[in-house]
Amino acid sequence: MTGKDRANRQIYIEKDGIALLYAEPSDRRFIYEMAFEEPEIWQSMLAKKDDFDWSELRDEEDHFFGSVPGKSKYLLIQYRGEIIGTISHTYNNGRIENLELDLWLRSEKYAGRGIGSAVITMLIDRLVEEYGIRTFIVRPWLKNARAVRAYEKCGFRRRKDFAPAEYYGRYLEQYGEGDYGRQETVNMVLEVDQ
Image 1 (cartoon, rainbow, N blue to C red):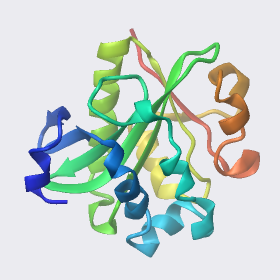
Image 2: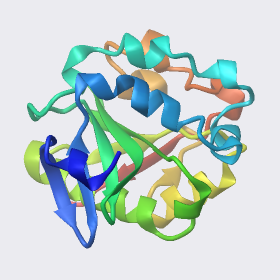
Image 3: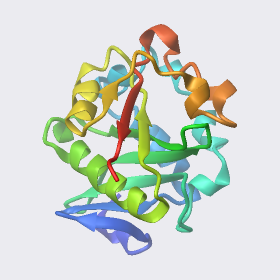
Image 4: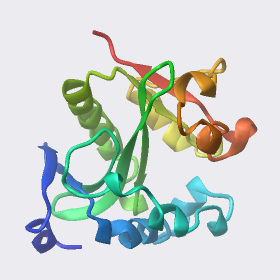
């Protein structure tokens, strides 16, 4: 995807050379395929390719896509005119109201440069401002130590006492155990001060 494609997309946030663009319904396949462009990327998130199936994005709820603002969205990360990854936020209506974030970069060449941390920080700032939600969760794979460190740099803390029923409402049955199961999911929480 080139800078020319940006003309057809609405910017959600833009700061310091990074833009978050609303993902459109037609981007579902593109987002899925980005995860598998480099073995180092998918192997940091998955034990095997089959652990992330096309149906997960194909069948995602429609409100996650398009330029209508909302608490649950997929966004494309654009850096210096190139789409380099995706970040999504999902509203969870548990007792502790929260937004769950999920991010991946499509190439190793963008990792370790602070781009992911900058994206997370600017997105959280915007979501707090727009929705007043102050609790954010991420649930990476235990084997993805680089992601865990990056989330810690953004202020997320591991929670051994993480109780899924407190954070998830309607998604509890589907996501309560985490993508990697109880033993291999790192439960991390960020609570933004008032």
